[in-house]
Structures are given as C-alpha cells and as structure tokens.
Length: 397
Image (cartoon, rainbow, N blue to C red; front, top):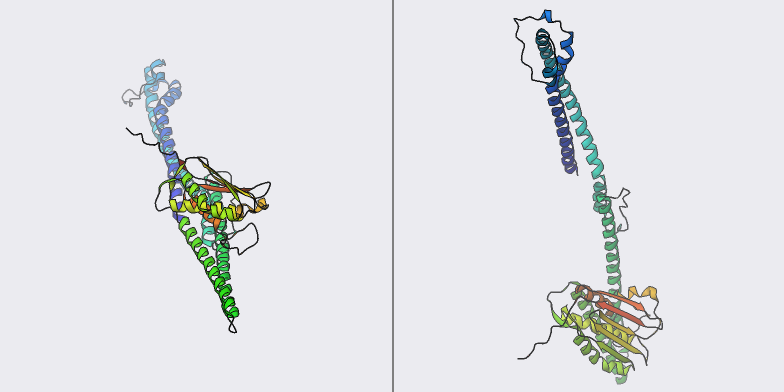
C-alpha cells in the first residue's frame, strides 16, 4: 500500500506543482508585457523636458496604446523611457525572485498535501486488506462495515461484506453437509453390524438368517442409493461438460411412464401436461432432475392423492397433494439431507438428496428452482431453465 500511496502522492503533487508553475508563467508574461508601458504612463507627466540628456540614447519600448495617444514633449518621453526600463527590469527581477520562493514553498506544501490525501483515500483499502488477512474459518462472521460516504471504496467494502456473507453461508452448508453425510453413512453400517453381531449370534434358525440376509441386502441397497446420490450431486456441482439439445417434454413423458407402476401401487393419480420445449444441457442430469421431482411428489403423498406435472416454455412444475408443509421450512428442503418430516427408512425413500440434486442440476444448466407449500397440503416445485424453441419439422418434397 505504501507504493500505491507514493504513486498517488507523486501524481497529486506533480499536478499541483505543474498548476503552480503554469500560473506563475502566465502572471510573468502578463506583467512583463505591461510593466514598461505602465511605468511610462505614471512617470512621463512628472519628468521636466529641460532635464533631457540628448546625448544618451534610451532603449526602445514596445508600442502601446498610451504611446500612440498621449501628447507629451519629446524630452519627457525620452527620460520616461530610461526610467521605465530600469524600473521594469528591477520589478521583473523582483517578481522572478518572489515567484521562485513562492513556488518552492508551494511545491513543498503540495507534496505534503498530496501525501496526506493519498493516505486518506487509501485508508479503506488498508482496512479491507487487514481484514482479509485475518479471515479464517473461525472468524467468518466479522465484517468491514465501512463507515464512509457513498463512493467507489464504500461500494467495494460493501461488496466484500456481501462476499463474506455468501462464503459464510457456503461454509456452513458444507459443514452441515459433511455432518449429515457422515450420519447417513454411519446409520446403515450400524444396522449391518447390529444384524451381524446380534442376529447371527447363538446359531439362529434358518428363517431368522433369511430375515437378516434380507435386512442386510436392503441396508446395502440404501447405502448404494446414498452413494449414487452423492456422486450425482458432486457431478452436477462441477457443471456441464457437454451440452446437447434435449426435448424436456419427452423426458417428462418418459419419466412419468417409468414411475407409473409406483404411482399405481401408492394409489396416486399422475396428471401430465407437456408442451413441446427443448433445452441445451445434459440429458442424463435432466432425466435425474425430472425423476427426483416426480418421485418426491409420489413418495410424500397419501393414498388417493394426485401429482400434477406441467412442462412448457415457462419451465417445469410438479405439484402434489399430501401433508401440510411449514412454509418456513420450504427453502431448506433443497439442502442435502433436509426433509419436511422426520427421518424414515421406507424402501426407496433415499437419503434426503432428491431436491438438493434437483437444485444442483438446475444451477448447472443456468436455471433456478423454487417451491411453495400448497394451502390444502403438499408442495409445488418449479424449475426454470433456459429454453429454446423446438425445431420445425422438415418438409418432404
């Protein structure tokens, strides 16, 4: 920061000194052009013509309005020329001396003022730099909170505070994710160990062994789904590696048909309204996005309920009936391992990654996701993606 302060001080001081030099030069030129004529004007009427020394030649003076219009005796004008020349030279010499001293003092004051001004201007930058050096995981809550008039540096400090807010939220979310992931991964391991140590102790009967085997298989399947969800979440968070034209309406139709058996088993009616729409993105990730939304709407529903799926140029919307959802918890449902209700171990329930994967895939495609609680119960989730109009069908000739 000292180097920046030195450069700013040199810039400000140099500009001030240049302005002083220019001002003094202008004053000297203006004074030198009029000093002789002014002295002649003042001295000539007081000089007697009889005292003229005709043998002494007077230096020529520049023509002036006074010289052309004033009427005086020739002797008076000659003496006035000699007096004004001597007085003018002395006045200009004194002017140069005083101007030089004044310029030196002015230059010193200008440099000092420029150094002080540069320090004042760069002080907020020093505060930001010091705060950035002190930041760590333990004091992310600290903010600059710069108290200054509106301006570029105030805007910079506020932007830095906003960045710290986002970083703090991201770090907190990652910490919650790590803790929840560790809990979710530890739970099936604990179940497997308990089944092996307790269930298989003391030579159990064949039917109990078969039950334990099924339990271990189900637990392993839950672990596999959890790991697949984590991998999918990691892939979508990295962004898209390739893009292709994907017919989102066809993807919705395919996914709802694949989930028709589960909907029938749960006694839930699925209503689909699909208008032709295409997006640029990854077909596999978009398939997971639609699948997770529809599957979440089916599994968090009640027998005899409905799931409504609408897709078109304005986005994808999935709404379902079901239990009441607290509106305050709705934004949290898109975080990993967050659920609207207490943890359950129903088959295929997943580990609370469904909506978080939806949000991650939507962000990877440059889209947005949101949800709202329905007044009668259930949830309505909406995904907005950058779309493109479907290509016109080719005409046969």
